[in-house]
Amino acid sequence: MALVAVTRRLPGDALDRLVAAGHELRVWPGPLPPSATELRALVAGAEGLLCLLTDRVDDALLDAAPGLRAVANYAVGVDNVDLDATARRGIPVGNTPDVLTDATADLTMALLLAAARGLPDAAAAVRRPGGWRTWEPAGWLGLELRGARLVLVGGAGRIGRAVHERAAAFGMDVLPVGRGDDLHAAAARADVVSLHCPLTERTRGLVDAALLRRLPQGALLVNTARGALVDQDALAAALHDGHLGAAALDVTDPEPLPHDHPLLDAPNLLVLPHVGSATHAARGRMADRAVDNLLAALDGRPMPYPADRR
Image 1 (cartoon, rainbow, N blue to C red):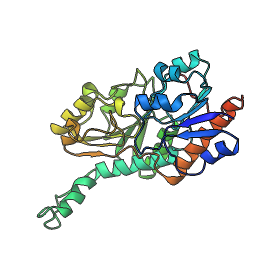
Image 2 (image 1 turned 135 degrees about the vertical axis):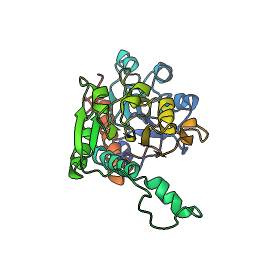
Image 3 (image 1 turned 180 degrees about the vertical axis):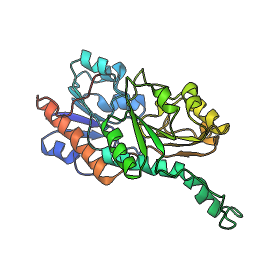
Image 4 (image 1 turned 120 degrees about the vertical axis):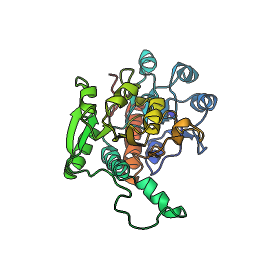
């Protein structure tokens, strides 16, 4: 039997499988993530850790749990985990791949459509006195998707390919852009840029002022990957000066954004609270894979879903 620390209550019954296997659970009871101090107390004495992207797993945390034998991240990414620190201690780290592809691709298209047709502003006008006066031939004009050029950054990945399939069904001209491709050249011909690449030191701030200037006037930006891929100051400036037509984001840096964050004052901006995987099916599959990783590692077997250390 092992003590397993879990940093948040999870939907579904996946955690019951840990109990059925004879393990003891210590689950953080709060609705918000534990602080660094609270997290260290939570993992003290634990052999397994099931954590979220909001939980930083670093040397300080690992020092507080010298008996830790496995880390299961309830996420596709692992940028909250210091993989070098866990590797030095011989602690395997797992993630939850192949579970949220469809959910995130669906949301990407929802954001793309909302930005292309200006739906947040149009919906707000209905509730604003005098905002909806009559049917206007030049009112609420937006981008028609058929024939529009969509640049998919990270288009070769699972989510990128799923978005490609959906966008093609709308008649969009889809251009996947990978690591060796010229993103600036592709951006110069884009009606929409959608981000689906991992966050690394190479991709941090990938969408900066220079890239935004390369976009044609009125182009759109969609981000359902990681907030730090985008220079948010540059994004706000591009929205304020009207060069960027709209931006639709499911991710920001930090998360959540403070209510007085300057980005939120930008026009033609839609921000969601990181709900890309928020379907019952996707979140349930994430919990199942995280538990599968812990059960295997605590039993001395390789994790079925090990984190990619590239």
